[in-house]
Image: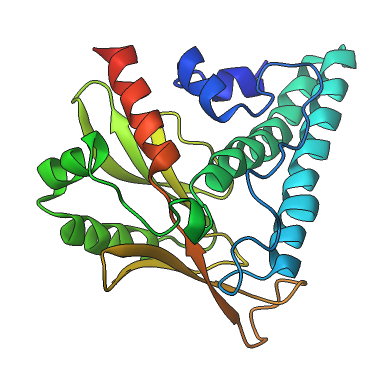
Length: 240
């Protein structure tokens, strides 16, 4: 069975617990946001956050539960194979967004900061500088055809950070995910710097119907390295 647990096999148990979506339970649930829906205003409105979390993320959770239930009841190999795509799509959407919410925080709680520490040092080591990392990340994510995700992942074999992209809602399984950015239909994102070394993710959220012909509604997402630092430390310790 191509279960959610198998999709996230590269995530060590300690890292899995760190951002704690219900990865192995028989019934998956929508994780609570670690902040209020209006906490990222004026960059992300309460309406947008509510829609993205309660509607979009909940849709993946509901779809994953339905697909796994159908898989468990199926007695046909052909049916089980046919359900694996739904498990991968919805399971990936659930895993990816559960990490994504942890990468954001209000300004009053370290949002917009890449703090000095092991992660920042590793970024400077592997990319030359934080600025070079941002340029490389922007270039890689801008090249995504259609929908997908941009990642800063830890390569356990090479013991270094790398920028990786995945299509659609595919989860990152070749690396341990540290930072994930939604580059899906309703989002376009780039990372840029403001005075004071503030890091933000600038995104364009299209209409509720995801009609690309409508004018986009721009907003900024607060990036925080607080959880990313933890994920990086756990990834290194699990593979050292």
